[in-house]
Image 1 (cartoon, rainbow, N blue to C red):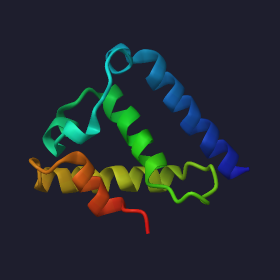
Image 2 (image 1 turned 135 degrees about the vertical axis):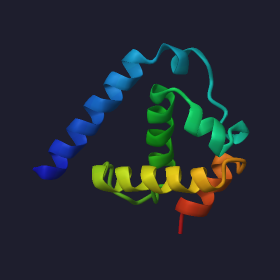
Image 3 (image 1 turned 90 degrees about the vertical axis):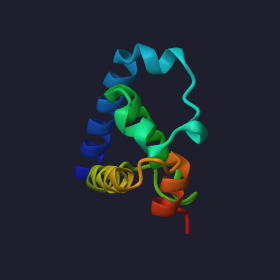
Length: 102
């Protein structure tokens, strides 16, 4: 039940973010061209969408379709800390280093 509640909360958050972010929906976000600095200076709505996308991208193929909100938050902090220390590193380079699929 707790997992379902967490998934519903995450889905609600994402729905609100998607509905309120005109700029992110109006333009493609080419993550291969983003640096950590650009990611950290991006609009909150764009960051939310990117973090959600990254969360799904780095999941294992056989992982259950569950958003672990505690892990999601921890991963976001880990990425922020890394990007603070390495602002000129490409965002995908940073996420590959931190969250590479095993």
